[in-house]
Length: 391
Image 1: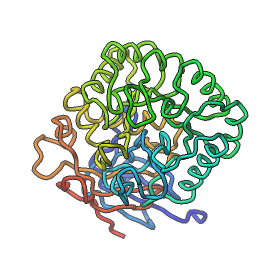
Image 2: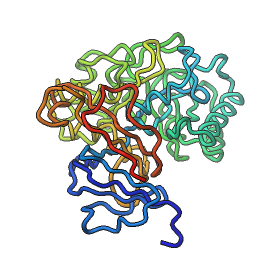
Image 3: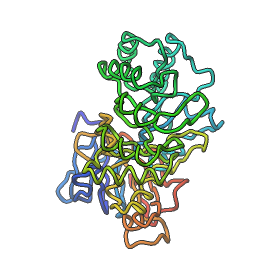
């Protein structure tokens, strides 16, 4: 213990959601994190809970992994010129989101499209959020949008500089499957993960990306398979689920009916582990601080799946697909959590039952890297019970 600088103990946990589809609920009433990493999960009577630097009494609420928004469009800091809005990331933290993944910084005014400028902007964006985490939220950014005339060495340059993501394929000048496929292979060679725009145009400059382009391009993530905002026809959505074994991303700013179709198709294929969730915000419809929670409640309530399973779409599934060390309650992973409970006066016998009926839970606290980042949410409905920092 002499080398440990911080010790977080969360006791009196009522229920633990793991984030893992194969075991969504864990036994235990206590968790210990040392220096921002999960060190032990179990029952307090069997654990060393003495001398914590932070002690949280959960008061019998649920502990879950912090939510991951797989599809956002940041620009700089906690500001988006798309909606002229400040502190949108902080608002999403109050909706339980502790990690965000950029699908391209496309809303930056004057976004450079020449190759030198494109690479410089991507590297700068990666550095912005590596050096500054708004309200503690982890933002994986620096996601360049593909443009014509990029060559293999450009992707090596980006990777060598620390860029690990591509912005949505199709938002730039590269819109054909053949060209996209070649560039995506270069990106994959250098460890850069790709997402492709799916559906009709979302903003001026984007265009229709149909199933044929998606299949030929073979990006790692089928971005907003339910459209951002306009979805493809049903037969194309089911074809993509069946013919492409990449990630199936369902977003808040898309067609909800199409999202349910994609989820049900994935279950029919026995491939629920492919489902991940995003908001696709900021966008024309704004910022949705509760967007991920709303997706969980919608997919559970209307899609008729257990709420603890839907939570996995926004946590463990994304973490595994994206290679993140958060999103799962497991020893050795980042101590990124939300403490949640049934909303006051919400129907349902339990919190999970209430979500299954389509209701949002109340967020009582968020924790990132073992540090409390926000108290009771200012955006969710008030929780019935609240965790408390005891010391």
